[in-house]
Image 1: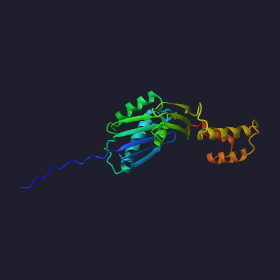
Image 2 (image 1 turned 90 degrees about the vertical axis):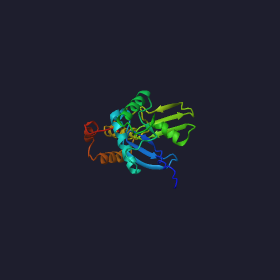
Image 3 (image 1 turned 45 degrees about the vertical axis):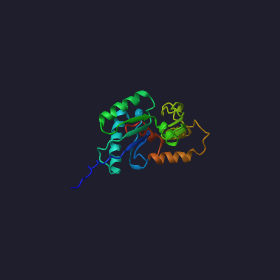
Image 4 (image 1 turned 180 degrees about the horizontal axis):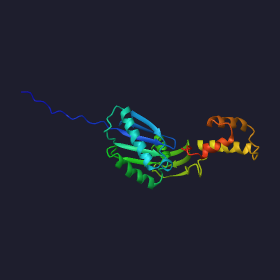
Length: 223
């Protein structure tokens, strides 16, 4: 008679996820316990104040499924943890809402979650001792974070109240300056003819009046 050791059940691999979400785009990356990237997916922006909670949740679930597929893992795979670093989630109320809504919409998605503003994730990607980050994308923010997680910020107030130095700020200021020059209110910007040609070409228009439906029409979207 031969004695056989009982078969050991295969241990499921530890899979973790991280999300970086801004006003324009979002990326979800899956990696193993050693930090090796297993899969990833990209999608639209997930700024809480721009698209709303429902859209954020829907995008995250879609990206998680796509990332699992790219990693060759079944859709039923439960992540050990999912870090959410997204614009608009610096305050406690949005954090609480996403922590309630996401597990409810996708019960088996992850065993645990961590939600912070997108600038926090950038700091801790570089160092676990804290640091300073300056983000200038669609919006802008600067933040100092200590090793204990405390810190201060400047900016991050959105295009209506701030976002100095961001893509939106620079582009919208260029359009305003072009109009002021053409209206005769501004003479300090001699090369505005080149900017004017670039702006009109970008929007596919031939005159300033055609900017009105671009900026105020139903199809306009400020990411």
